[in-house]
Length: 85
Image (cartoon, rainbow, N blue to C red):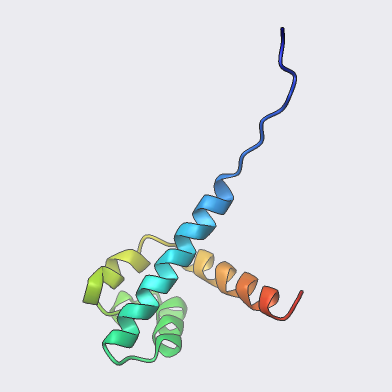
């Protein structure tokens, strides 16, 4: 018997979760070192300079696994979700 059901999967949601996990871990590392995560992440996103991110807990290596446009996209999605859009 032939199964005509289409199986659909999305790698996008896995990638989104991975990006969110990176942001959480980097945020925690920045807080642990006494930095303002918003200022530091913004500096990194705007300049591309990884020295805005501490190397504490491997945060700098983690953030570099994610493209800056992906970081911006996740932040905008989270913001829009938070305001009910």
